[in-house]
Amino acid sequence: MKNSENTNFFERVYEVVKQIPHGRVTSYGAIAKFLGAARSARMVGWAMNASHSMEDVPAHRVVNRRGLLTGKFHFDGTNLMQQLLENEGIKVADNQIIDFEKVFWNPEELNN
Image 1: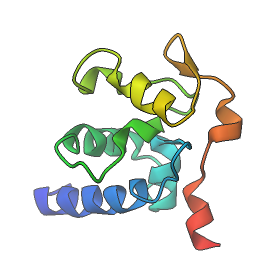
Image 2: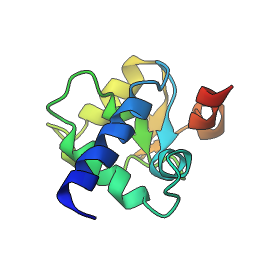
Image 3: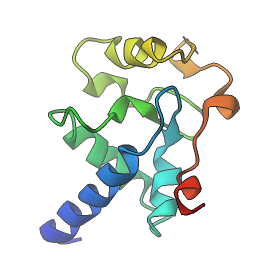
Image 4: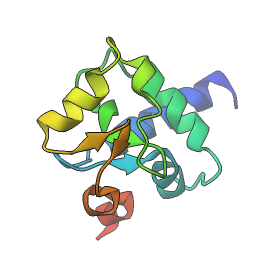
């Protein structure tokens, strides 16, 4: 992808992430699929990594497809991602969301 295409894709990712409800999470792959780029989960991860200076993008609500906090090392402090999720009532143990299926938000809900 060209740099301008990356920027455009990242902006589209941010718009989806801003819609994730408080107390819910989604996955990199679910966002990629929603954006019509099902094989671009890694690009969604790069967008999340690049978003940490943007306070209006709740990157902590994006995890891997199994509910693992794979992006936690990109947050200041080793437990910030977990703390932010727990502040929203999401339970985390061993870097994994408890009851992931119950708190999972599918971006496809935006089309309903």
